[in-house]
Length: 251
Image (cartoon, rainbow, N blue to C red; front, side, top):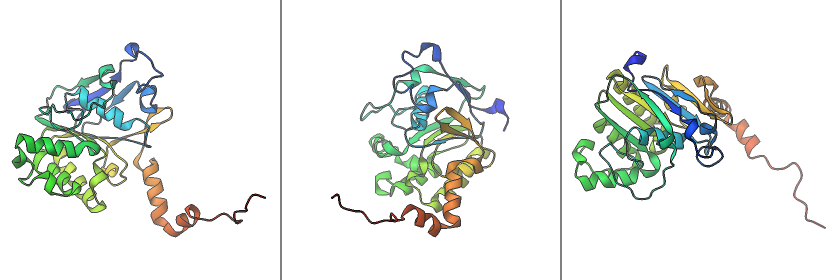
């Protein structure tokens, strides 16, 4: 898929209008040093430690693209609690000549609210015909991915693996690939070394000095998981080791 076929090409922080670079969310590592974030025309991953700013960054991208801050399609305009940052007001997204046929913003922490909105709108048929509230979190997400996601569309996903077993993560990866072949573009924040193994994807790691392009096998997620699975007992021995000397009571 050529770069010109991207729905979104890149994102720029409008640093010249940022009111206070030391205030939240501009002081987050992923934002403080941000200049231009270039998206892959198929799959872009944003990874990093909790608190590094990856979800805040993804939320700003989604809201700037017209999605509801809590998730859903561009037609969803509900709000249960105003909690999103103002970052979307200070970024500029360059769009390609193609326009997406559809799209969806998924965030794990507010998916329950989205499922409720789907029921309120009585559009459950588009999501497999079974109430998302009557399925497990993982089942409802897979129903969304299977029945609601469609060709030539843009999808912004925040930690989709939160509800998925390793086997379901593999199934999600296969479905993402099907959709990429049908002209879709994905921007995903994740901790999952399974999902971020998607071939040829761009991976950006949120570091203390900003976003850094990273090869899959150089991500901490891959290296820690590989080290643990190679010798789980050795790592457990290190993690759970007792102190060499017993605790002594103060005199």
